[in-house]
Amino acid sequence: GLNCAARPPSWQPLRMSSTASSMSCSPVKSAAAESRNSKLVMPMPLMSLVARLDAAEGLNDSWCAFLSQRLQWQPELLAAAAAAVPTLAPDGLVTRTTTCSTRGKSSVGVAQCEMAWAVASSVIGQVWELSQDPQGCYRVQEAVESAACEEERRALAQELHTHVLEAMVCPHGNHVLQKCINTMQPESLQFIIDELTQQEGLVVQAAEHRYGCRVVQHLLRACPPPQVSRIAESLLEVASSLACHLHGAFVLQRMLESGTEEQKYQLVRCIERNATSIGSSAVGARIIGAALTHAAPKDRVWIARAVAHDPQILLSLAKTKEGHRSALLV
Image (cartoon, rainbow, N blue to C red; front, top):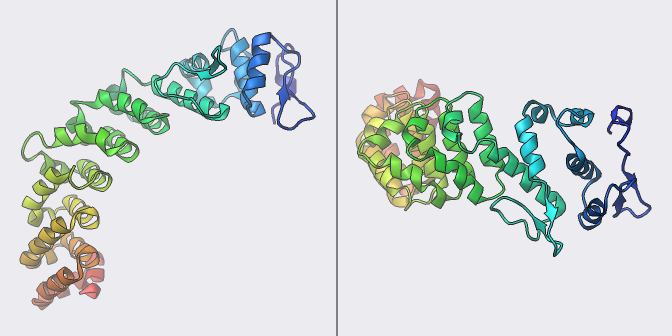
């Protein structure tokens, strides 16, 4: 669907041969180009882009108009992509300059890996600075999400070391941490847990923060319980107050959904002992509803009895939007 009339005179369009699986470029520019096209089976648009990148002397050629606006606005990203175009080694295997292996991948997969590395390389060395910027944080998130392998994601996350606590309370940096948690392997996230638990009280402060609570929730969901056991212990120590906190209640709700049976049991006992204060709070009603949904059957009975023991609590629950559902569950 490209406009052939807008192409430079020197560029000849690719022509499909009679065999659907083979492509040829006429005229053939060089033996190397012919060798590449014969060994790497690419879709025609990708083959065209690779060929033009090989032949381009600058970024101002008219063919740049066919690229996305994002690439036109960021010439350094395009230059990085051009430098990362896959080449053929003497043995016919595709080589690349990044740390992730492309052996066994199709030509399309190799090109995708190289473009992902180009995006990542555009933010390397300035990950933390960009994470604090409204626009820069999107670039970092894109780099983390599109990274070709775990090694590349670790290289990006490495620059966030010693900045976790700052990123948690940053309106932009917290999104970068969330992206790391949602895309990286749990073992790669240990640095976040270590910084969060290095000092007593930091976990609770994060759970009560409007941005930090999101990071804690994602950690509880993405990491296995043994890895986040210290975080869970800190939360359980102050569960009665967190249950009535605007942001902390969401963290306890996540624990009821993905925590261990022992953690759920301890949390249910806390809710049962403090049913009056928690049930009288508009925020606490959410926790009662989560406990009645995710706790063990016997634990649900204990909570229901504790709430029903005081009719005033049940009436208070029924008057709020969150509590109405909890009252019906009771």
